[in-house]
Image (cartoon, rainbow, N blue to C red):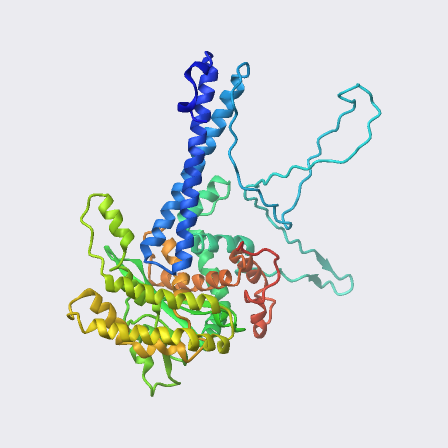
Length: 538
């Protein structure tokens, strides 16, 4: 019941009771606002999953909605606690309490250690005062707690012995150090590297955090540790690079990254190539390799893919064109176009939601092209078919595509050619249509090969690591820094693709690098790694 619904004559005269009623009503309103925001966010996520990837601004909208939900949930909890406090003060007057409806809490993971704090039981009966008590059972209430980062110094003691006969001194050899002459252990090295490249915490921030925890590690010292760690991890990176380009199908994409230059900041590029056979039920391990370059010249992807032949899924970047030449050595690369890129061009011209928002803010709405909207609907129908065959074998996918997708693709081509004839070459919709028609063999290749995906989203997902990182750091310090980052992104992204905790995996392979045979390095890769039970939450 809201305050406005209460009979004024029934209100108590006690000021504390009145405050409790008002705060209880405020708590209900805050909880309702948080619940509405939660439902709105879920609706947008379901729409995104149902209708396929949207323009990048939709992802930003979801991020903003999640932040708003976080603030509303925090506000609701504050108001609830204040209402409870005022209700407790007004015990003499009957005040209806308020309790938020919360989702049922899931049990804590079994792998977490348990610390039992046993509260002493009663020695006398609370009813009759008798002392003949027998234990009936126990009630356990679990609370998740966090222990601050703890550090320890491991002392490797090597005892010396001398021979009484020949006076020769015997001693065990010095223990293995992940980094020669370094003081840091593998777990500390993995934490520093993952915080820098996985959590995007620059070394100066890490140095400040260590200082607050009583550990003196300068930025220069941390930089030395990062450089040595990257050298140690090079064999793992090289093996992942080889695995990516032994796949029959590879996704490729690139993005910008700012890099510090003399007196300014330049725009460099980071390229990613992803092998992910899961959509067609393949047995190959999912993995990704990143490269850094100072510009976006076509020579870079041509160098990256110099030894590769197979299916290449990417956008229409002109630097890829030489890869598709039929007489290329060591073999041809087959182009597979991305329907998500093509759809985005139409979607930007048919964004009804954006126009509604502009109109609500008093701005002139942009023109919504009916033909663009029709193209989006036709492409969405193809994505809907693909969702039903994801994970099936290439043969099964191909059979469904021939039956369901092929007629829709033929209809799409006929419709686009008919509509294109009505438009001038300067029309925006005509440009979006030309993007597809000029590459039509690449857009229809998925109808004859069940391994090909409809989109290049696997590569775009891998690049999210950099998109998140750009919000935390301003630029890469140098070209060498960009190359180091690309190597570490490859290791961290590959671990995440295999649902493995990157930091735990890095710590383990750093500890085992020296003693593990180089010929069996595949045993240390994330898809074979079983040393730690922890995995990322789904």
